[in-house]
Image (cartoon, rainbow, N blue to C red; front, side):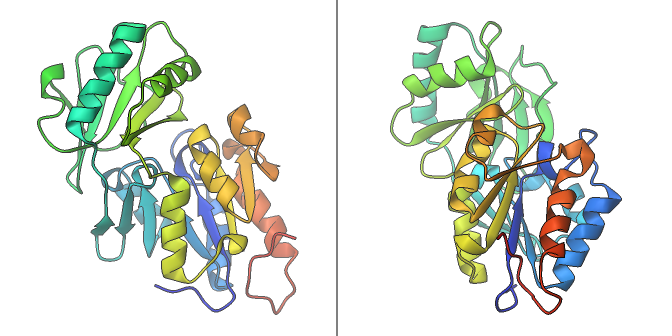
Length: 281
């Protein structure tokens, strides 16, 4: 899939951004995305969810082309159902990181997302199912079995620390080849280093022949900061994290108020009738 000459790109996070709190996509948002497509503007989903957890949303949106999944570590060709690339955690480095973090903060509640299109959400005892947004299949396993198969990421929780405190402590002991991100409420993740939403989106845009100045990006959490900084115009949701709002060019209405559709409608309305590119100025 290639964009039309001169057309822009709209990049959206899913949870807390394109999706309402009940995980639906409103008719207004779907309609706006169809209008943009008719003008040659491409929509790229950029999400922390693994590709295996996005199928229902792709179908709801009639989504085509490429998606950035797994916080940028997966590039997924939706039309062919193929992962073009993925990055796995080094299990030894991950175990060493967890041992250092436990020595620093005490017991952790852990889960992992295994690799590939058949990924599973493996949950160790004590990891409560509430707050995580992954849609891979859930399976309870012993903590010693979390790394029995290749893993894309580890989810970290702590009974006594806030998300921000846990992420800060985790970064202090994060070794080479690893990175930590805060992706949502009760979602602090350990990931392979060198990948984030900006790296994934930039690769997809390169395949589409688009540069950052042609991109409008929407997000709601700190893991969206690299993407909003990379894009020509970065939009944070009103329901978003203060750290993201601080780097955004614009604050959209909340996800439950169809903020993505509201901003895109304004940008589309500002375009000359004959224009076929999404403009942010």
